[in-house]
Amino acid sequence: MTRGMLFTLLTAYSTLSFAALPPFFQDAKEMKAILDNKIVADKITSGRPIQSIERMPSDSNTRWQITVGPDSECRLMVQILPAPMSLTEPGATMVGPVPFEIQVGDLQCRSLDKKKATPTYEERKEED
Image 1 (cartoon, rainbow, N blue to C red):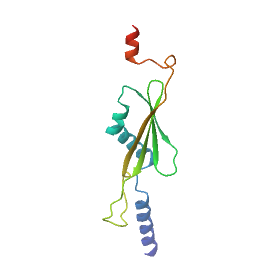
Image 2 (cartoon, rainbow, N blue to C red):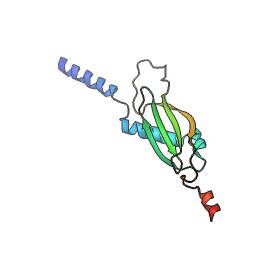
Image 3 (cartoon, one colour):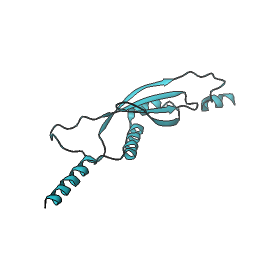
Image 4 (cartoon, rainbow, N blue to C red):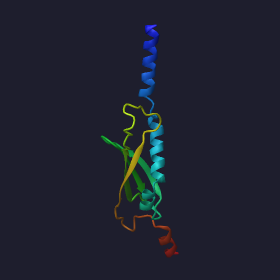
C-alpha cells in the first residue's frame, strides 16, 4: 500500500511540475502574439517586408529580433516579459502556455547607399 501511494504522489507531482507548453509551442505562441501586436504592426507598416524573426540569446526574458526592409536595413527588438501571476491561489500550478506581455522597442534603421539599396516600388516606378 505504501509503494502504491508513493508512486501516485510522485506521478501527480511530476505531472504538475511539467504542465507548461514545450518550448516549440511556446515560441510559436510568442511569435504569433508578436505578429498580431498592433504596436509592432504600426512600427513596421511603412511598406517594408519582414525578412526574418529571430529569437535572440538572453539571460532572463526572451527577446526577438524582427528584421525588415528589402535589404534588411531595419531591426525591431521585442521582449517577452512574464505576466504577473495571480495572487488569489498561492501555490497553484500552471497548466498550458506561460502567460506573457510584449514590450516593443524602437525601430532601428541604418542608412543605405542608394546605389546598393534595392529600390522600392515607387522608386522603380519613377525610373520608368
